Length: 150
Image (cartoon, rainbow, N blue to C red):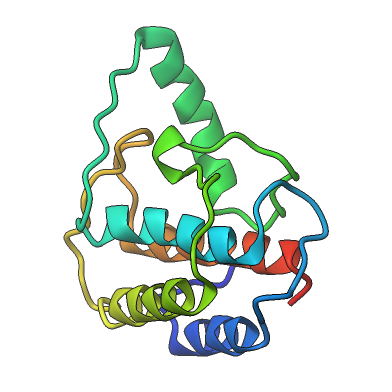
């Protein structure tokens, strides 16, 4: 599995981002391209500790999260239409260029942390290794760039 902590994977994501335009359309889902760019910032902001999500999970929910956790960073593509954290749902109009710039900056910031060993706990899934954080971030970006055909 590729990792956003690897420069070659980060460069690949950057190249794919450069192919997006304000008129790029989704192959599935409800978001337009600008909303997708804003949505993709959420998980990076969590990993970089720019935002903190408040979650209260019951026993059953915690058990379910443990079962789903490996799906976040394995080689299998995500299914279309998976649920997302309510904080990452973008359903209002946003401007393409500023969101693209913000996402690019977050990707670059994340990639510079390749030697970081002390990552925050994920608010839903708990502890991830640095490798898993990188794989999860890459997989999320890959999923949405594929959604928009790049």
